[in-house]
Image (cartoon, rainbow, N blue to C red; front, side, top):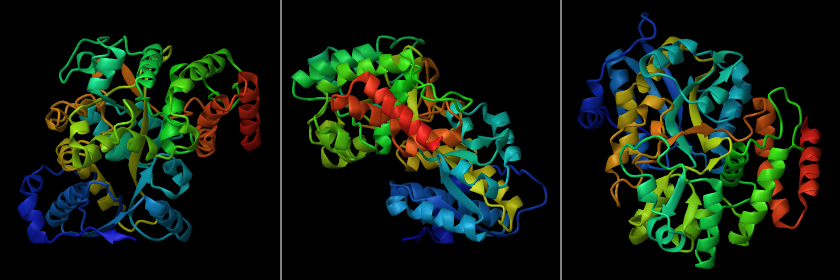
Length: 446
């Protein structure tokens, strides 16, 4: 159900005194008075919603705007159903939270926000290519990239298991402080294969699924990307039958025997359950797994370390799912909407929200990888220090299928073509058969 995350004005002023004192940066000078309605993603960390409300209420008080914020859950697709209904009806909230592909899906219903994003980039520097790929259409920003809900699929590994079984000291590769670029160049896909075999033999296999859910799509999408194994090129041409695709499928053939036998039926919680139940040494997942372990299995949380994904022939790619804030064309107060979004995206406010979310959210700006929260979260201290992509990691955020135009990449995503190829290798299909299946799938929706 839709929830209205309201707190009283007195609570907002008491809890958000620091926020209320933040400088207001206006996009336009016309003044913001009036009303605004905002649909936000319902954060899985409840304090994240409260932090948003504190910032919004302080801004509303200062600008004399009546703002209503509704937090919509992604459970049961409530937020996407509401989004579609509003777009088709031409009425609803002024500002809406968009996730990944939905900016492109409803771009013709959105107000361009180049003025907002350009101003923010001037302040804070560039955003990641992943954010630009999804938020910028025909040279125009159609939504503002945000941190709220944005989470890459980094690696969470057991410190002791990786050291004992695979001889890997992840805290040496990725310490909780700045290192020289290339410090962890040894962390490659070949090394992941070697470590997976060692941990499998010890009874603690890496829990990497190849089902049709988002974790599997991102895991294998980034793996294919790191090998340059593109299925479709930038012009929309099917190129799946190429040497790089064959190479990554050969890699999959070597890795799959060392993964759990049930990975083809994995859902997004399967890897989390394997990790928290002490049955896996490594998964690809945001720190939500660590957070649940901290509550339910503290000894496992204290033995966990988050760090970037392996490096392949084409680089170290970190699978990412960015979130955005957009303004509907039917919004009645577009000027105020832009001013509020610009204010929410100020560094002080993003950091304030991120502290409340225990460091789960990743800002779109590369210059904001230094929030203190990632150094302070424990146990152990530094466990998520390397969760945000830092300059010396030598990596980049990556969207599965982004070699192709977004209107094609989204169909590859929705049909889980890449993990589907891996699943076919798992069941004994040859590489030629797997490529032929993928080509047929791609031709079917092209």
